[in-house]
Image (cartoon, rainbow, N blue to C red; front, side, top):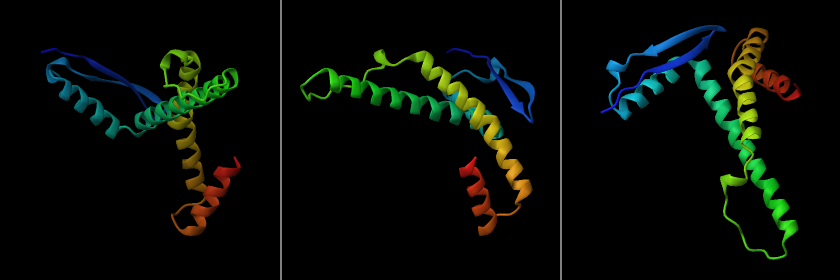
Length: 138
């Protein structure tokens, strides 16, 4: 049996607050997972940040693999497929992309969508089309 102290820095309305889950309530991996998922469900900013981190980082890994496969195909004449390896992935580039994802998905996009909702309130077809056009153009 092991115990954890899970601390999360949560930014709701851009005011930082620390949420601490006491070690007495967490004694199994299932409880750790449950505590983390409950925080994610309660805080949309945290959820958006995790989604941005995952999508931007995963996309960068995919882009790096595509770049590496093109370099490999130019350098050798045989068409033997090669297995994916994390050894060749640039970790610093991936982490930079992930941090950018946290900033955009966690803070910029929700702020921008809130502004668009104030300009064109409602969920009717005309409002959704206008919001979509502005989003695509910006």
